[in-house]
Length: 222
Image (cartoon, rainbow, N blue to C red; front, side, top):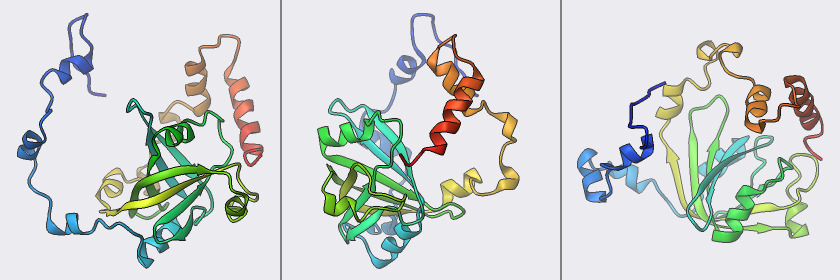
């Protein structure tokens, strides 16, 4: 892990922000102009090919922000094709039961916008979709979204404004789909260890958290 030294009364962020780039023109001095293809491949609707990619995706990252600009990225998963393509400009993401914080849904209700990043396990292709968004509980829509076995409580509906297929470099560099390059299981804190530290609850044990996680997974569709 990279660290840097700062004075006791100055945060690392404040130190780095002091001379950070604030002018887009200055930023462009650091990077060359994008290629023509990198600009042109952004579209405002889905093609048969990008619809097929979404149909193969079992994992999508949902980005949102609250009215003050505080950002959030949350994962959504399900069987391949769990995100429904309603037409070439409209997607519906079923909201399977999770931690019930509803961070993403609160943000979307407040700002009316969301971004999606579709991933396909084992493949380096990713697809970015940004646009206007809303939270729907219409029964006729929810009845179509039964990929996890039953209609969800709500759906995140996204009106497509930008569709962009990323190049595969990031996933190739990360070796995300190469098991031979994955870290050993004991190289990271377990989910239960991380949760216990976050909770700061001395009355709980690792065993308590592991039991709660096991029960949560067992009843994950309820």
